[in-house]
Length: 176
Image 1: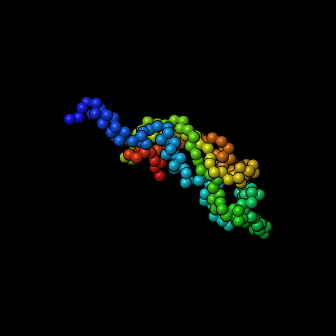
Image 2: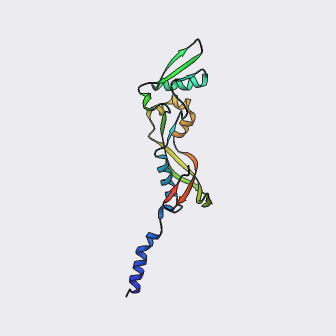
Image 3: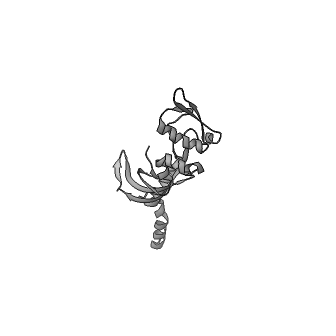
């Protein structure tokens, strides 16, 4: 026969099995989900670029020349047709063709919306702050940061952004 005190102890022992804390809408779970998502998704300067790159655009030439100064690219000029042709150096081949400069590390959740059913999942919109991790030295140089202001803003400190998170039985995920 089960006594009342044994029944209470058994109920308390089994209670955590019924609740998955990873699925609770908490800032800690949102941060964990976003950091797992961003761990293998790097931010890149040139996400759609292929080398060799030929350009006659003066603004593009000026930006690419900062990567030449950082020893990531070499340039040859073809004055007859007003084109500069860029190819990665041996050092630059490690980062080419996209020249990724790190990945996001979420540090805080600023706001989140209440969970709302969308496409079969409860979803929330979160606003978060992040800093960049694993930023290479070349991305920290003043000339490269001046030529690529979006990258500079992301790598200089804490930056804010938004994301959608979907609640699942095993936690949250970023819908693709």
